[in-house]
Length: 294
Image (cartoon, rainbow, N blue to C red; front, side, top):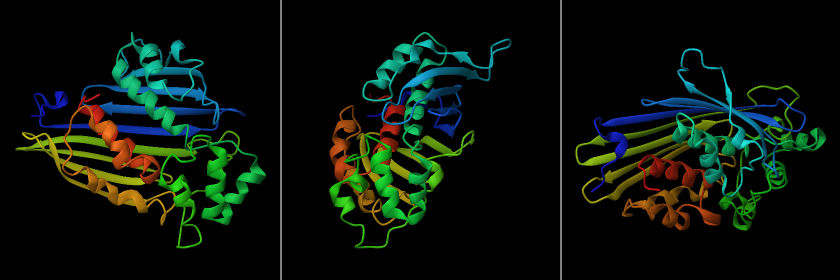
């Protein structure tokens, strides 16, 4: 039996996340995330270096709506020097542990880390090669973000082999690899996560729309049995349409899976890894996080 904490006293919960990247420094970006739901809203802004360091230089936050007399953005000293790599969620939790809205701020920090993997700083003449098409963009990706190789199907050897054998299109542009100095909102993302109880079923929905992604996923869970009984997705925009398309059907492999604390680990072999899709995995994991399963 599943009894979501966020649905106690209500049948519907929705969280909206807005994030964007500004090119504020010669060697760093400012990543800003606003996360709001019916319970609380927070804003987290971090100045951080791009790949490979992914290091936060400074971070500031505020609770929304702000309390009377509160500063516009207060510093989060514990995040300065943190690298947005393995172990970052734990580090973020320690940094914001005593702050109001700590749980929301950890989730916002995770989104900041994800934004950091969407824009980089390559030499302008090299970034200009992105205009030549998907294959050039893919090669820039593999050098511009140190953690991309083998992170999902698109960046695996199997994904690479599909170039030249089928039609591939991409929304990637040179500015994502080398934004103009001072450019604002170089990358913009909006996500909506929703839990909704409908009789004996729980509907889980998550969407993400940004410069290069368009995802809408939906699961139905039998509340009494605690099992996923339906799973579907729409992907109107993908980084490499024709290659990223390949692993999307794997969402069906979650039908019949028990919604338990071990599901996140099992998902890695079902919809993640080199045969899967990192975005599909993350969006699903975020829904499990809202269910307080890990």
